[in-house]
Amino acid sequence: MIPAGLRPAWAEVDLGAIRSNVSEVVRVTGAPCVCAVVKAEAYGHGAVPVAGAVLEGGATWLAVALVEEAAPLRAAGIDAPVLVLAEPPSVEAMAEAARLDLRVAIYTDRGVDAAVAAGVRRVHVKVDTGMHRVGAAPEDALALAKSAAAAGLEVEGVWTHFAVADEPDRDDRYTARQVERFDECVAELARAGIEAAIVHASNSAGGLLAGAPYGMVRVGIAVYGYEPNPASPSGAALRPALSLVARVSHAKRLPAGVAISYGLRYRLERDAWVATVPLGYADGVPRRLSAVGGEVLVGGRRRPIAGTVTMDQLMVDCGDDAVEVGDEVVLIGAQRGERGDRGDRGDRGEERITADDWATRLDTISYEILCGISPRVPRLYVG
Image 1 (cartoon, one colour):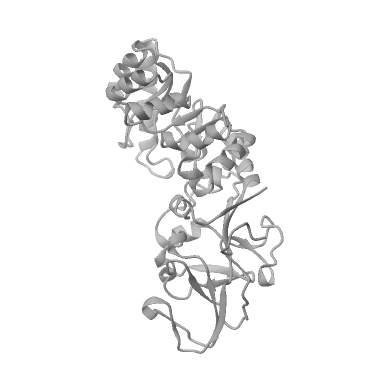
Image 2 (image 1 turned 90 degrees about the vertical axis):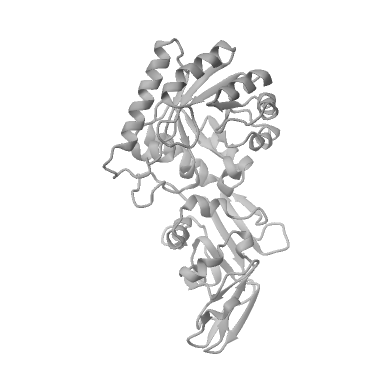
């Protein structure tokens, strides 16, 4: 079914898969509290619908990167605790966080002062144990937490972030040393009378692979059905939630020797049917995907992208198989049967292309692929 819109292209988001993924994280990690990360429009899936699904699946907290990312959640009536993962940069941003009743990360004296001035109630002290992105140094965390408490802020949480938890086979014990530094810091705070109600360190990789759940696990990529490291599967039964789908907008039979798209870099070796698909790099299909062997599914079979991906469209080499306007094309997701008569996308045995497949070819990660799907691609929610 084509969702409302004029262009036959959409991203289908399975909220049932998201609920299942959260439940699986709860089962595998055994964490008493799961915080689902819905920043960047829930990794491109849609923050408000996903937030509802993760809470139904067993998460009790949400996390965003920016204060403004929380506003649509509150407007939708979602009243679960929301943690802002980066220290809001100004008193104005802190004031909005206070208005929305958000928990905010703090890691500088400036952040403490802004939180107090803005009327923020609860903060989570971020400790930099080795990621070196943001956070207070372990030796400075105690003074920062004391300052926050003395100023009337509730130090509800203490947390850190792992740098290489998605590489469990590393032999340099980096994650283990981060845990040791963090444990020492938490113990020092406790000795000073600051015992945070929530201690958290693990992202998806930390919870599923490194086994360091503490009191709360912050789950990002696993919510959306992907392993933090495809080469080291965790054993969790995760289901990719997003499919990127379109319908053929133009089809033609071309003779052998014809070159296709900008630069004429793809030349037909034999007579072939070529389909035009109304998605391009402005929609999140990387321009160079065709140059590294990118494929799509048509009629349940993998077909190569023919030539350079353009801004709004791409072409597909369908070989001797006739293709018609309206035939389904799956760029990410599952398909079976002739002309896309695929039945339930969850059926086993279907041909499937994943964000990991794109990521492997493009030397990146599934996170970037999913977040890169443009807002101009309408989202259709199922499940």
